[in-house]
Image (cartoon, rainbow, N blue to C red; front, side, top):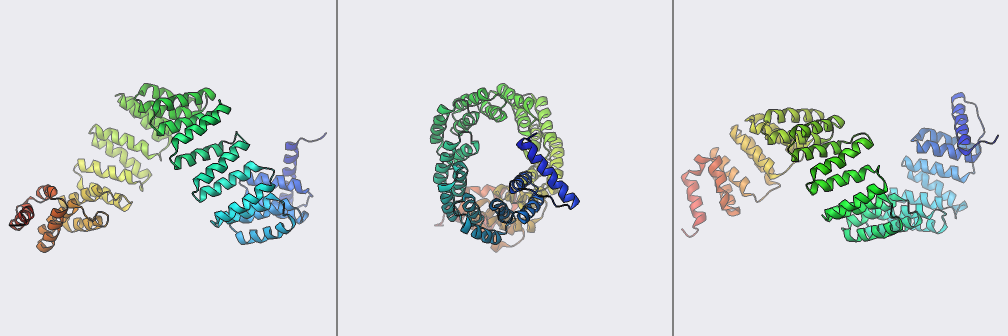
Length: 466
């Protein structure tokens, strides 16, 4: 009885693995080795693929395809010079083998020599029997060069070869998006849909273009067509929900998001959005239920923890808000959004040392917004930590060199620490940048504001001729 191709491949694989276990040497023809290597590569078993390649070449030292697999292994391990030397030898014997050009192009691509890679791929295109694959590779090289017009052209050629190649379709739309050619993208997708009217992916992409253009009614219609084409298409239901939220049709949005929960395992995104919709509808208990489900589903999704924290903060239940943001920080202590909320909540609870720690961590993690520097400074002033406040503001000046709010605070701090000369310098800077912000000095340092020398400088600024 003759074995089917799959049965034959499984038999070869079993024999090969048996050979590895027993150290017996079995003979395989080169095609069997190719199938075994391909299987291991597709399943991420690189060590076994290398072993099969080595044994294959020992039995079939002149087999071109096995040598190409060997090249692929070297490229995978970034041994580019070795791979290139093997390809140079192969090129002498296999001038009309497209895979030689493709692998050589792969090496150039790894070296960021994308223009050279494109030249080789264009040569491969002239001799290949699989034009779609090579066109896609050329498109990717143009993407690396950020030449989106040419990338788009080659992905379009690729899609002409195979209209079911949704990877090419996504790349075409990506190019349109990058070029901000949303109307052109819609025209292209509509032309594609005229030939493929039930392509749910194309309808989905049309919807996303209309969403970007804020034409929500047309986006909604496109997502409905995507769902008609494939009623199991989770992405279309999620995007439809987003549109319905924009239209403030929260009940309908909840229905759309909820459908996805029955099609597959619940996604944290859908649970979060359902919670947001319930909150907009004033159904607080249901909102909290879904926020809780969201963080249970994905504890690393910061938007879930932030949604619960912000909910309690808006309700002025600062203790509950602090409880949840503490939990979030224990899960991810490097999240700047958590630390900013931690600081803000503690500030409202008059826990100033904890608030200062929160703003300090936010700054350490790269949140350089001026408000973060200023609020931390004001807390340090409240704590009497004037030197730390000054250091904080000088760090802020590196990012906001002409900020009146920073200069008034520095003026107040230097006057308060009896460094009048420095205080005068920063007060004059502040008045020059924005005189109206003098209220900062008046509120934070009332005694400094009343200082006779300070009042004299303010008067001089108002009436320079006096």
